[in-house]
Image 1 (cartoon, one colour):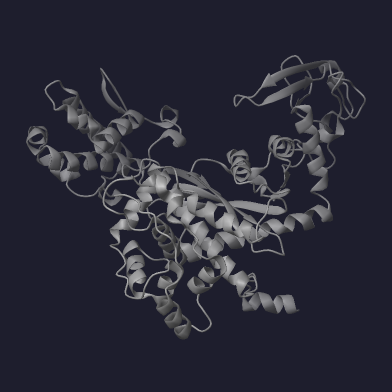
Image 2 (tube, one colour):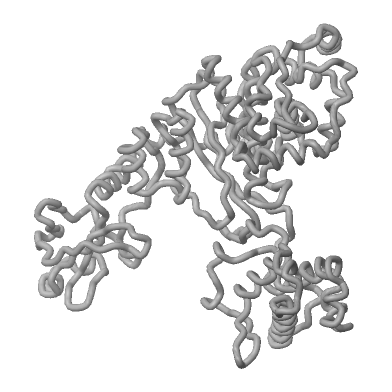
Length: 551
């Protein structure tokens, strides 16, 4: 399939005349075409197509259709039907009214080409570039970021369901690909256990019996893997994806030694970030947040929030569900820097903020990271007045700390956390602390022969942390920070308008591409609202709450 160079000659005269007569007030598609012109040129996607072969359908048109289907919540088949049936879509695409469109399967192939050539971000980049040309977007100003969970396109499985489904999936593939090889290995009991989908309600009752069932599944799985690894087995069996998933899953879930097969428990299991959660989506992970658990991914959306310009999504990041918000702060800044869209002020919630992030954003990106940090440390059992860390005076040059009672520290040692974060441990003598009249109001931390102790971050981080703790208690800071709440509306719009909270595809690359297409669709919707002077939506308030507000 090759790419033919096509020149956009504008909207055909008959199409324009009929559409304007049918829609005198316009539609989103009509207004976007009139305001932005042809959004996606074929040459922007040229590297995803070879130079020789049968001519491809316009990739610029496919990109635009891919965005529109998220804007209207359509499947591939429905989107392809709309290209044939909708006049305003033909207007946006610059097609004749009798254009036959294309088969819906082309959209899946187009997405695969984008991923294979690293062009997942291209559609968002092109829309943002057009907005910059029109003066609707610039670097600087304020932006805000938040994340939401994304459910994988697979069932959430418990451990027993997972191992059962992993083996069943491998057996299904082997039964179709190598039936004569598999037949001698299975029995009627195998068909009973793995002939239908594994559901928890079919498991035997009782913990001991269930453990025996899980270990029996483990023995069956090792029987298959040992047979595949045997010298007489065809080599290609080892390359089957379902077999590779089975091998990895069994390494994570079971031990096999001279005593037999043992079901891993507790700390013997790999951490959740490294452990498969489904045999059908090897990128999805299970995670929990605020008591809610889900299997899948997380997406982070960053948007502009200037009152005199449309609020446009400028960056999309997608991770598996176990990656925390704090791990993404620097990555988001790097992504915005690559687009030359770094803000002057970046409003985020506490999950994205540490002292190190504030310093890095300020020094490396010239961005003020505005978000709350943890409160000053103190012992949880203190009643009434107590000494927080800020009550101690730090002399960084002399590497000494003076407590509120005037006692000076006796030890200062540079250390690192297991994560590599540098810190300083400061200790006071046991004699000074034992005779202190304010002992009960002081920190409870101590270490061996020493008295009370403090843990300090590097100087630049410690100072910025203390400054932020003071600032965030003021009304002025709270009023500035109130702007961040608006990103919740963006998450809500993305969820309800584009279905971003449940991925349509399996795998992290395809899920990320879907999130980028959804964000681009939101941008087109917001540009249309800006062009038609549609006011921003207000926070929904129940009738009962309105009565209270009125009172």
